[in-house]
Image (tube, rainbow, N blue to C red):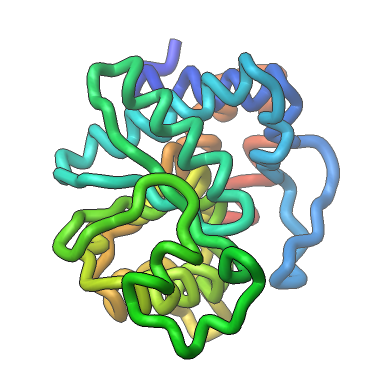
Length: 228
């Protein structure tokens, strides 16, 4: 029995394995070009049961930070579904929070450059429109270089003056770049936004290292984590 993982983290890893969304057999080439011995694909959570589990896991992760917030923002594209699922997950835990996401193109496909901030907000937002001063939790599936996260902040800043205390993702691979820095740590330093994940690479290793049938996978993952 694994006792040093929070129950929701352990349950989430088990659910990933049950749905073959956490792959431990084989080699997986990442966007960075690195060849990883494991890969987690949140896109495999695409039915009612798995989406419910995913939304509740995000909700529990956000609540565990103790950070107060008003709205959930789904970073396009994958964050859109996550925002809705997380809102439902929060509601099941007694927290009723609204969600929204931004369109890629203004409503009506009109020219947005001449619009006032309020008009731009109304044309770009689906869901509950945020108000100045609102504390917004951003949602996405993974964090690689962080380009989409920086762009999301820029897009939000065009719509009003908001507080962005937290970004929640599913899996933190805890990797560092060739310069020895972490993209997540750089993002937190640049923006002042805390990044939190449902699970980390260390959580996955800790879990599989306690399973005899996964001993080979645990060794391969340990070697990879030491290298990167």
